[in-house]
Length: 148
Image (cartoon, rainbow, N blue to C red; front, side, top):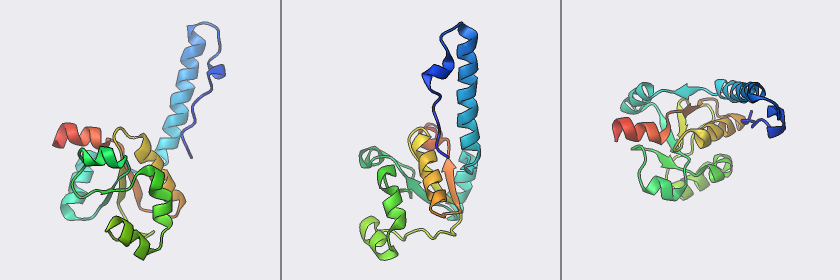
């Protein structure tokens, strides 16, 4: 389920209380959509990477990833992800110089700069049947602050 912004008309034009209620509704909608996506915390990501049990995908643009990424991450911009995950394994290997993830693989971890595109990517992968898709919600921002 994609994140759905609350239309401005829902916020009303009355006093401050209407605006606050609209904000609460917006946060509730965003939270419930995120609650359906399995996430990975930074300590868990560290353990998964150290043990070699995670396949990491940086879904930021090529330019963003070239400026710095989490070691071992494969860069597939979110705009390419759907077609990439639907490629046959040989085409994926030729284009990305990496093995295509299997639908049943565990710990396919997606991340971006701040969290939104990583969430989108995780939802997209889940929709295509990748049952082990997870979102690193802390994103590259957290990684850079704590590991950089």
